[in-house]
Image (tube, rainbow, N blue to C red; front, side, top):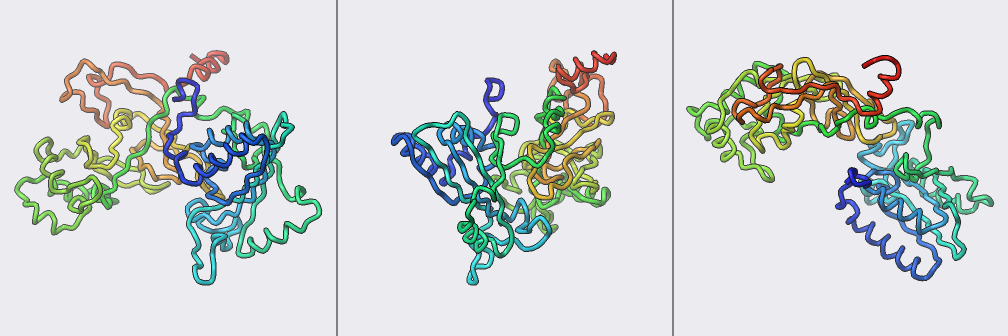
Length: 377
């Protein structure tokens, strides 16, 4: 946990099969005192936040690193080069032009008998349809190290093995995490084929009214063929409808504006009953009041070019309203009144003095200190 000096990551990514192979190789090298590991695998561990512990471990156990990043990832780059040309998987063949979906990298890790005080990390990219030939041709170079860029993995960049492409003073600027006191608000995830979302508020209201209407049979509702009548993992639509109808009635105040994509604002129907929305985010709903607003960003860049890095909105928002999954930094923080009954403390999109007993600016201790130093309090 970050509260105990950790990185706040989930362990499951470190259980991937290729990570286990790296562990086996590392243990054998450390046991022997010196050696070389060469391995082609997914390139996720080069810079993804969840693999920071793995990178940190490598930097402790090895002295020199060479990374040949073969790119070709379907999600991060859409299998395109930075200038928009095709960038297939390095495993693409005439028989299988698609290759594999994930981007790949070839790593060479060296541990020497006489250990270096500071490990050296070299990195280079290969792009396009000729990348395999270019990789083989590069082995003939007299000064092979001259083709690599030097990476500077350190705590501030989560020990990323990729070279930084920003000016050094950029890293001195504060990040959102340093400015805010609370940042745990993730976007909503419907996963019901947009049955709870629509561009047209009237059509959405009509659809949801039918869903709540006890006089409309399940068979009649199913004929509408919405995502709310479709079975999916962990979602039984018939049981869910019965549960919703037994607990709530349709209420227009839950028809809310919803940021679906950048500059694409739609309408959604919010319901606090678990599993109608796949992820309803009640903690986000607590903050979604008429006079509040959100700055949205993501944990890290996910594509090249990166695209929109942050968005300002006053609305509820989708987890995928921006690439990399949006996280909200509310401008204000509303603390619910714990003394109210569950029925009366249901949060609303509008300011309700009875449901809130504390409203504060979402500013960290250091941000408040800075504002105080320039005469703002």
